[in-house]
Length: 357
Image (cartoon, rainbow, N blue to C red):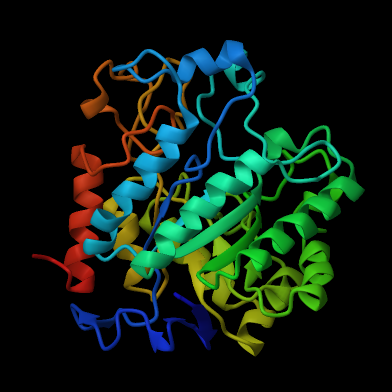
């Protein structure tokens, strides 16, 4: 059984630091956790009208079981390139930002009262099992803002407890917890805002003391979106995002995290688990001893996400051939390493970690 632990600023897997003894270009790689944003690994859409949008080009239908099975099947190739972790989220992430789709799709593992849906726990257990067999770590996210809008504060608390209890009952030890994706102003529920989300971590830690818990904020900027001392103090590791950053901005954000008084008092791993396809950002992060996560939305329509500094996803429509499907977030997903952007990331991680064939 794979077990992830933390010692100081380093991640350990099965009692040994990740990438044990590895240095690259004179920099220490040991203890890092290179990762991929794969939040749609357990994706489904309970709205039959919007679900049509995710149909596979080779079959003409959407299939949640195919999606999770193909995801699990792709992990060994990721692992062979030195990627040790990925983020999967019970509420996924934005699949497509065209308004009529984004405002109506239903990918939510939680009932309105916070209880978990069996179909989602079934798929998440598959993901945990597949990662466990390969010695990989799953960053399990609970919330994405779009699907928390109808949940009360009590429902949010119940959902946190339910998700943690599910994870504990699996018997797995190869996961980290991310309470929510990008706590901030988009969340209508105040306890999921950046100034209160630490309350959820403080609630969960006495009940699930062995779990390693954090939460993420939006793309870093030295004037905003940086974790508070209260959040850093109660988190087991620090999660930040690099969206819309270029290397210099990313470096400044990392420096500000390290200058946080709570971080200076008790240093811990810093993990970027959402950034871009930008290899310059990857290189900026690892050279500062920070784990980095590849985020690739994929082409998908004229209103698709356009804030990325390295890719304009509006320039092409969604591919019509399965083998050519881009990205890892707009369903249907080809979870393989099948585009030049994916290949550039995985090849670079293989080079950095010494897994290059």
